[in-house]
Amino acid sequence: MRTYRSQSFQRGKPRLRADGTRSPIVDVDVPALRRIQRGAMHHYWRGVMCNKNPFDLAIYGRLIWELKPATIIEIGYKFGGSALWFADQTQAMGLDTRLYCIDVEQREEVTDDPRITFVHGDGRDLGATLSKDILDGLPHPWLVVEDADHHYLTTLGVLEFFAPHMVEGDYMAVEDGVCDTFDNQDKYDGGPNRAMDEFGAAHPETYEVDEEYCDYFGNNVTWCTNGWLRRTAAEWSG
Image 1 (cartoon, rainbow, N blue to C red):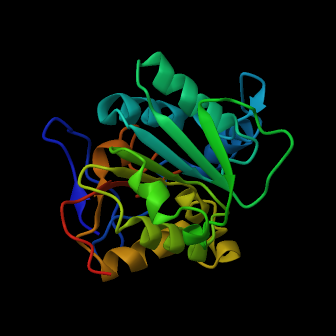
Image 2 (image 1 turned 60 degrees about the horizontal axis):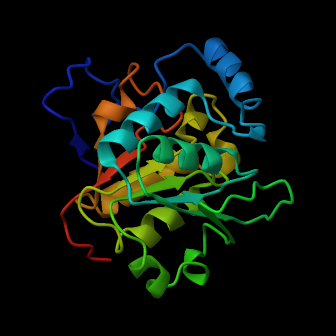
């Protein structure tokens, strides 16, 4: 997968793998990262569980302001705290953003908010939830947030499903590539990074890694390691 970096971005060179591609490893020592993760897993937004870390909250805030998404599609909303946070951020910025949030489980704790559409669905079978008519009715630009179960097959399914429907300049944030840094990627059959590597090798012109967001706080100091993806102008070939 190729990379994208604005001319104003002057961070250092990313950590590379042996084959010369960007490493997904976070440039923060693991004990400190685990302490941050513990905090993220106990983070609430307006009383609703919102398991986001401080780096990504800041990056999402900047991306929302710069992209001004007309639609945010979140795969994996859990208790709904992140959906509520997205709704509040877009409203505070004066945006009329539509939020469409999907999870394989439906919980009674999910917040009831008229700005958010909560839908039952599986990230590996999004076609059963998001019909062409629904997708055609969601205005661009899009911000798609893949935050489901961290599994390779789920991330791959999300990448493949949205590729034909996104347009140039839309963004997808693939969360939890940080599992490689925690060395638990095998638990998820390679996890999000395996899916992005495979998809990028098969369709190199579909998405590009936006290094400005990935490396804003240092090399891949984000839970979306190599996962701030910008849709290119290339036509989807399937």
